[in-house]
Image 1 (cartoon, rainbow, N blue to C red):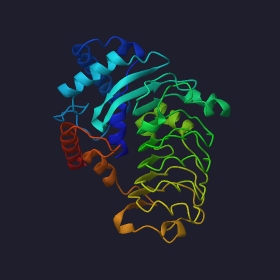
Image 2: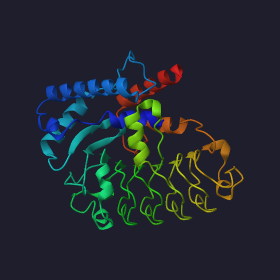
Image 3: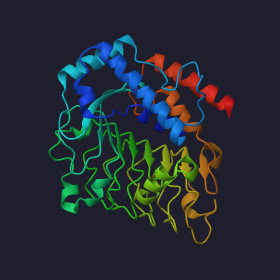
Image 4: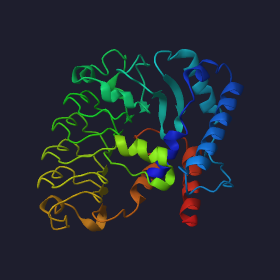
Length: 340
């Protein structure tokens, strides 16, 4: 499932901010999408990132195209919002329900100015964020103009390291939070206290394999999360949490009450950690779950059925998704499973 979400998000990447400045018509948008598809295919061939989708799939490598309605909406966004600071720019993300999405690449400081009504935000390839002081991190959102209360998706890939406990304060509508590749060793206990609507949380360590490309492996190995501990109240306000990924870290033990308020979890991945003694289903922290109604991976990855279901139903961020995308994604996923 991670592959499918990564494919979706990666397909939104844009080469540089000048590309967006040049989008003045639907024809320009179509040309830009074609160029992005070519870049994705080249990346696939060179690094083997996007495995599982056949090159001759009837939907193409880039999945569903924009509908005419979405083309008009995105064109209107480009005319209304010009994101010209830093390396941030508007991207189309209607397939997951985002009406206004922003992607930022190679940031080296706090988030620059973005539209206040941004719903989805990707911060990628921004490993210079590791140089920020704790004071700068506390002010990371301050001058961006972002209305944190309406943001539904955030991905930060920046090797950012230790975070202040108020870093995510105010993100009360957040549904999806991807914090992979941030060199975390521990997290402040109150860090997620305002995220009571969160459904999906990725805190995974390095899941990239060497056969996917040595350069890619080294980058993610260096910046991967290395969580060694969790606090008892780490996830205490996340009563709506459905997916929690903690695999490929260095966790040594679980507090007995760490999942006490997360009884709605459908997927919990804890494999490839350093639990001593060896983690088993009899651990007090795991007794709160009904194993027959969830995917609980302690030794290996048991699959991504529930993550697939969120995508197909268009419930990733609890926003309406066009039926065209849902039907296309469902068909793509069926074909992918058949190939496997």
